[in-house]
Length: 390
Image (cartoon, rainbow, N blue to C red; front, side, top):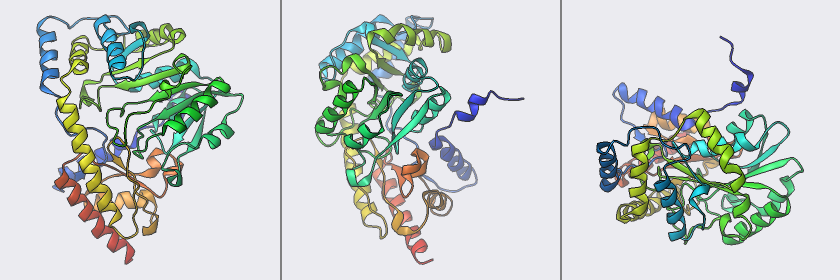
C-alpha cells in the first residue's frame, strides 16, 4: 500500500515513543521513573467529574454544534475576561477535542506551498510537523540558553520575509519552561504588526507561571485582530484524557475553522463540554494546589540537576519541565536519554525531540512526586559519574 507523499512530511511526538519503550521495560519487571510524558500527575478535580456525570444523566450524549455548545463558548469568553487575559465574544471561541486541533486547523486553513511559518526551536514538535504537512516551510527561531531560552526579537526580525505567513509563540514554554518578558512581547507584537503576520499564541501552560503574572502578545493593542489564542483544559485542570481544547480566532477565521471541525471530527463530546464549564467556573483550589506543587518540584529538580557534575539547568519560569544542559558529560542527547532509560531506569526525552537546537539538552517532566524526582536525580547522578569515568 503506497501512502500519499505528504505523509513523509508528517512527524510524530517522541514523548509517546519513549513512553511506549518505558512501558515495555516495565513489563519485563524493570522499575521505571516516568519523566518523559507531559501531563499532570493529579486527578481531575471532583466537581468537574460530577458535572460530567450529571451531564450524562441528563442525556447530553448527542451531536452538538461544531464550534461548541453556546454555554461553553460563553463560559470561555467570560473566563478570559475574568482572568484578565482577553476581552472577546463567544462567537470567536471554537471548542475542539484537545488543543492540538487548534494548531492543526489554523495552519491548514492559513498556510500553503510558498508560505513560511516561524516557530520556536526547541519547541513542541507538532509546529514544524503540521507546517510541513500543509506544504509550507517551517523556519526555526532558535531559543538559546544565553537568552534564557526565549525569542530574541532582533533575530526574529531577521527571519521574517515576504513569504512569512504565521508566527508561533509558546509561553510558558515546552520544553524549556521559559517565559517571554513584557518587553519581548511588545517587541514581537511590533514586528507582527509591521510585517502583517498572523500569530498563533500557544498558552496551554498559562496557569502554571511562577515568575510573576502571565504575559501574552494579546495584551498589546492591535494584536487581537491578528492572533489565534490556543488553550485548553489538559494542563490547567489535569484533564489530558478528556481531550478538550479551545481557540479564540479573528472573526474571518471562525467560519473556515468551523468547517474544518465539521469535516474532521463533527463536534466535541457533548457531556465533556459541560464538565469544561464546571472547570472554568471553579472552585480554583485544586488548580492552586497543583501550581504550588509544581513550583516546589521545580526547586527540587533544578537544584538537584545543578548539583550533578557536567550538568547545569536554568530555572524554569513556568510549565513543568526542566531542560538541563548535558554537554559537560560528552554524550549526545539521544545517547544519554537512551542510557538513562536502559541503565538508570529514568524515562526522559532528548532535547533533539524538540528540534535541532535541542542538541546538548534533555527534557525532564517534573509532573511526578518529589520522592520519584529525588530518586531520578540520584539515578542520573550515578549514571553521570559512570559516563564521566568512561
